[in-house]
Amino acid sequence: MKKIRTLLGIGSVATALFLASCSGGYNGQLLGESERPRWNPITPYGMVFIPSGVLHIGPSDQDVNNAQVARAKQVSIVGFYMDDTEITNNEYRQFVNWVRDSVAHVMLEHTKEDANSGKSQIDWKQKIDWKKTEGNEQLEEIFVTEAQRYAGYKELDVNKLWYVYQWIDYKEAAKSKNRGAERSKFIKNEKCQIYPDTLVWVRDFTYSYNEPMTRNYFHHPAFDDYPVVGVTFAQSKAFCAWRTRLWADYKTLHGEPLMDEFRLPTESEWEYAARGGKKLAPYPWGGPYVRNSKGCVLANFKPGRGNYPEDGGFYTVRADAYWPNDYGLYNMAGNASEWTSSAYYENSYSFVHDLNPDIRYDADKNESETLKRKVIRGGSWKDIGYYIENGTRHWEYADSAKSYIGFRCITTFLGRDIADSK
Image (tube, rainbow, N blue to C red; front, side):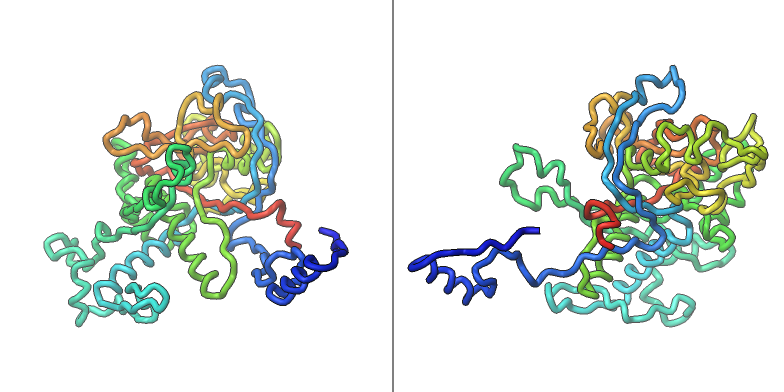
């Protein structure tokens, strides 16, 4: 805290102080702006706080084959909030239904003019009766045509569900060559189909009967609390952008300062959270084994030679199944692999910075397939034990949707430590 210093002066100095105190109201002192909102951060619902700390990335045990892919390195990670579970089907369905309703509101001309910007915006106070079968001719376009209906059921055409959002490419804007460039050059417009690919359950496994999962996994209430899968890297990013908007709209409405945006974790942030404060531990629970002293399997993966149900699940399980790690995070090993924001390069550990390591690259459709690889972490219900280790790196193409890949969100903590706010 600054000490208030006594000012001594006569003549013109005294006059200047008098004028400053009259016009500024601070008696000529440097006190900062007084009309500033209080910052009292709260932990977003369903998230846990991960404190800043040091992480030793790399293999937790001897791994000769991947010695150059995951070289040992010490890095520092700033604190953040992270979802305690993978994003569930029901949570993702809130996103899908929001997009569905927004499309329908526009079709029904449920709009109003924003008093501040003068632009047209959706009037969310208007109601949509989705059970109404007559008198909703304006909404016919959002349903599948009669020729495409199965057994006569009137269903939504999920190909009409697109989410449009913007983001700023700060890394590009920060380059010296772009100093003084127009801001619009770095504002990126994205448009993304957001409905999960439910056919992944059939597509991912040849000569295997998984049609019941295709028919029911994202639709049936039995799977509401299971991790959403069948989402691409772009869809997971779109979800984060929508969640940021949802939270920001609420905070703005109540005159509260905003938090940082929701996003996918970097590869290092994910590993730091997975370790739960246990340095060099092979698994989120510590280790060195995948079973406890009673022989019970501690994660949802592919035990032994392929005894899928031995761990208590066959495919995925509830997102909060098994014991959490010491940070309170569930299923950081197994259940569903998780997208990260990091581009996959075999030698990235050799050149990334040791301060919040982050390496991103968004390849265009026409670029090499190699440049479209994104890091996935944690292993899944169909993977062997090696892939559920904390230090194991793996990848998937960004435009791929799989029955074993989901995601969870994080948001950077603004400040030194959550204890400071208390």
